[in-house]
Image 1 (tube, rainbow, N blue to C red):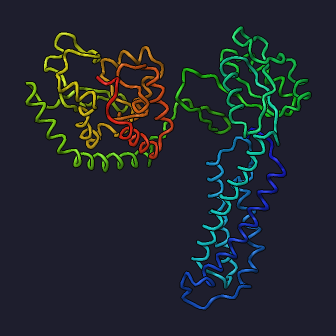
Image 2: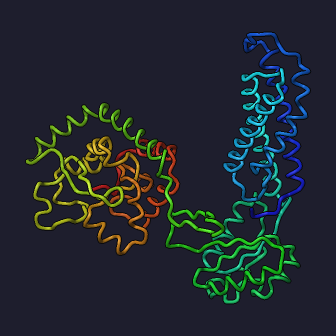
Image 3: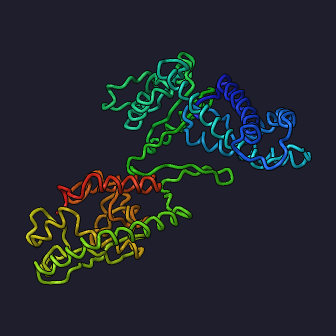
Length: 464
């Protein structure tokens, strides 16, 4: 964790959690046997059988909560981590309580009461934690419980970190200044307060508890020297990697038998997530094909009536793992459109496009047959837009991390498209948005993108 454990917060949360757990134990008894909301089905056990187990509840809950890390308090601990810890702690505590009552042959035994007790404990502890951290963050944003930090470096990473610390002031981490032996001319506006050798004195002077190293990887020798200096102090040190070429990807850490590993390219699309996404695609694409059938029929008739040639256009595209598939679209160009030019990008006022095709492209109606690709499994509803093999071979040589977008299925719409990055727009920005989608995927993000696609309309100024 970034910050030392606050003894006051640790003790406050411990007391609160134990009190709420004991209260939930008593309330569960009342709801089960005294409220009349649930049929008891047998004689009501006397209250003293419930009350006499309160000391055991205190003991078991304290052990369970400590084991799962509910009191590993840190300034950068996310609420998601807090929620997971509370869920694990509640589950372990419930199992310990049930096992103990069974082992002791206690006459107070009710599965419904245990379920109520677990649910009440989880909800009350989570809610109290949320309110408690909200109060702490409010105080920190107003200058209370503040911690001080130094940033090693004066480049892009240092500037960005300083801006983030100012923006998320509820963390209560104030940057004292920047430390660098070789500040560049571009850092003239930064408050460089010293060089590496000054670190021990500055740490003592300002009571610094956090040091962030933001030096780029090519200054590895400087990083080692800084860490050697900091090893003489008691501050907590964090390395902030400066990896601009990996924009859109998330860094993860792991430990392999004592060897620290940093993941530079990891995707959440594995295991059960793949099943969830495929089920979503099958259900929604089948429903869409049924709903749009009349529109598809009308467009098919118009395409056939307005220009010679087939109704649908099959074009090879690159999808999952770089494999190719044939993507279906309504034909929007003449049948000999690429006879002379070969594979080229569509352009504004393209004379190869039919008058109906121009309308279909502008409204994205030419993409409707791709729901069939989704149902077949070639594509997904949401994902990076598929590109032609000729262009993929070109882009993978000139655009960093371009091939990373092929670790998931291509989509009809995507995170880049709903933000306007389609057609004749920046490829690098499109890749950045695609990689963000890949590493931050959840089913809810897919629903959000689908909603944005419908809500923002199908007409795009860059589609032609």
